[in-house]
Image (cartoon, rainbow, N blue to C red; front, side, top):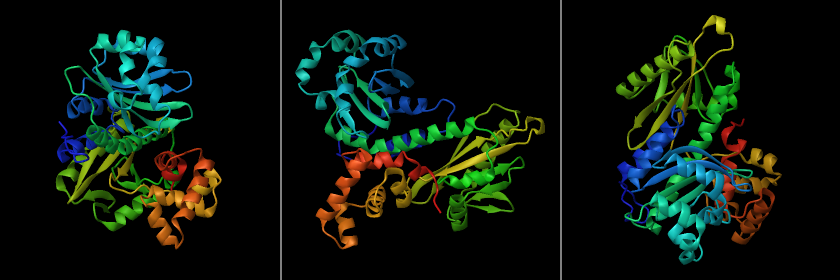
Length: 385
């Protein structure tokens, strides 16, 4: 179980273990199922629910659940969703943060008077809930709900702080899975098209040789810090990881030829003193089925990488001025307003005025919302010259 007695310092093994499961889920056949189950133990929960909700119609599409009886999910979707007070409150608050029923609902003493509480919450043996809007795409919200029983403690601010640390990783993982699924639905992905991706991406032929790497991958391979190419084959500094990588590559190549189940592979590449790289392999089925030519794609994800967006793309996407776009891109990289003011040799009030203009043009009102918007846009996922 993750230690949440400290404000933001969970037990590293538990938190890192959750991150590993989260990123492995990007290409896992069962998606985020293992991650939701692990969350129950890590945070002392009764149940976990990941689903997509329409904020206007309250339609709900359930994705991954653990600890829920299907009957209650059906009744929630068909009848009780519009009465969920925590969800209604979340619609008024910024996304990418967790909120708790015992901490953030106005007049919590009135909650037991609601039909939703009497008919849906109590019969399941639920006492407390915490939830977050992870992603927003128009009226559609990707939400995570956590439940506790009366025998379990109410959520504390310390626990919410720990959960908030998990949110940026969940945003990235969910967005990555959406895009990888889209890619897998397409056919005949040309090697040159890989260069539009910001993430290091490598294409392997049926002999396991590197056929093409995009520009981001070229830079990673050239550094020779974690992995590189020898005689056309990918190798790493970790012997066991290299063996695992070759085994998973063999499996996905066979799957691409129709000789095995079309499973994706995930390999964790250790780095001394740093979070491991996550190598994700996927079989690539070419359009000419008669040739039975195998191929595979490998995506390299660095959990420690600072999110990078290009100011020019941000400017074009949202109609910002050059200075406004540079401000928005800098915030995504973790800079503060004070740092930007010092860097530009201007006053903090000038920077705040520019930020207010950025908020107006992007339809946001907080820095967290702005960063979430940019990281879900092509400015983050597409490479730039």
